[in-house]
Image (cartoon, rainbow, N blue to C red; front, side):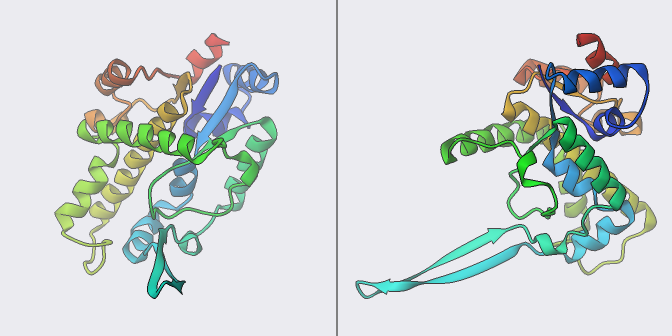
Length: 251
């Protein structure tokens, strides 16, 4: 059974002693549950909420240009575009310790495919799920994008982040001072983006269940975990979202 775990579950599975969490932990150890977490959640949730505005305001993806040797009188170059990992603040020591415990338990990491999005280099290489070849990776990326676009169309996932940037009419959030309320809303928008793309990575990987204890809270239908949006996801993509208690019962 392949289960993708939200941060609000896996971080408790590795450390807390509630009966249902211990049961999940044991089943992972026994190999009866193959456990996954999402790279985008690790990378973006590692950025402290109070620092997210500052980072995204100043962040620029890494662009490289490489000249190719002339051939038959023609000149060429290769332009590269990707994440600027040096601008990521890195994991808090407590987060790093949790990740190492998860690795020892057998958790694997589902890659995010966003071009240029800031990420850390600290995730152990042996935790990543590997694709056998480039064609398999692009199939994974296409499935992830299709699901992410659907979630955005529901007004969830990246939708709040995109709307936030559009309302401010900014590029990279630079140039304007934000109010405290705007900063809070921006941080929430990042969290919704993480949720949407985590579910999308789960779908692209073909896992069986997405496990979260997020009940949408004050986000309402703006959260992909709202009951109405869960129904839409299952109908369109067959995605089954369960709680940690439900995951323990499945065992």
